[in-house]
Image (tube, rainbow, N blue to C red; front, side, top):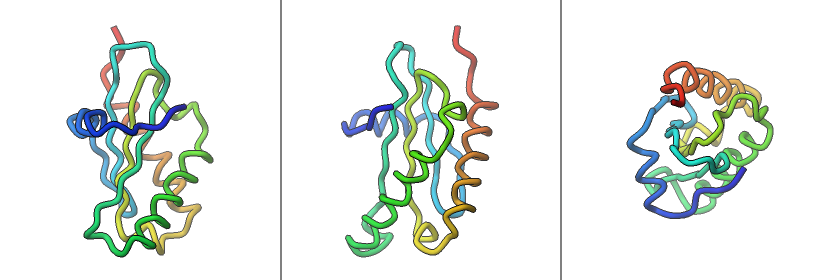
Length: 113
């Protein structure tokens, strides 16, 4: 699994599926290429101070590390957009939220040709 780093990739994923949760928003986009799964993380400045935003980003990265790869669709890009609730929400609950969001993406995602 790789990280998304280019702004153009984040913008492309923003045009795909979107699942809202209390601690984050999951954006997903199936790609036509045979590349690896890529994940990006973002937290806007209106969420809080740099320290708070970094803490949210670290929690989101750890969520993805602890998620079973079977939940992630191959040849897809994902972006997790952190919300302020990610600071105080129980980590185990957030992990369940992410799994539920990934299952919803898998059900709504178009099947590869």
